[in-house]
Length: 314
Length: 67
Image (cartoon, rainbow over the protein chains, first blue to last red):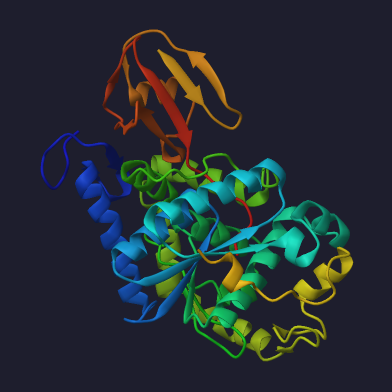
């Protein structure tokens, strides 16, 4: 196989582009795809401060690397989830990445700062671990962005993530979720803008980007995620992709272009029910937001502990 | 050749010269869900492997909680 651009030996074939790339031109492709996503969807304006949600995995580290390379003012936020060795290893990967590049990494540790970890929090709240984890992440990313004065939170959701979530939402016709499954969620009172600059890259490409760039990401999967529904959707979509390259892209971007708007009213109706949480002030349809209820049930700190920007920043 | 697999981490021995795509098909692995690495270098589906090679088949699917 030859690189489509320079005809040198290729290191990766991307069947949905019907093209192969050498290392140099593959990296360029990834950067161009992120730049196109940012421009097409108006994700980040010049000069804005970006907070990248960093897990130590391939997607978030690739995203941070690409944003910094493109000249964005991007700091990282790492959440310690208290998932045993997995969290220890993911924290090491995130810290090493930041240290090697002289980047600012803010850290929040769930057990230390909020008094619970994901396994025990999920059990106490009667949620599956991924639900308790996602809920905690969303709340704490918003909170850290607000406290740190960031304009936008960038997450490492890739094309596979979005296609799999869309698949699940369509299977159950969760119309409110469909209405807010967008690559950009505008800022609202109490919430920063949220963007997904990797939506034009498959996760095979973000992993390849890390390998080519020498980024030492955490390869092992979260032990709490094993066998979850989201992984099953990804496997199903990859089975389709193997025989029909480009299906995931067409599914997701076709939804954005031709169907997403039909569900906006459902999402807007849900947004109109939001009011400030009586405890932390985050938008919620209930008196207490889901995060504060989780903290309460998990037996942790009854009130949020301020994010220690000064102590945790490098 | 020695082939490193992940999740769980294990190593298997595969005999014979073959292309990467053939190795993946023989192991019943969807090429959309993995990368193949020889040494520190990614290799494409048409690259040839032989008994002296050490390769890693690295899964790329991750599926924990999405924020």
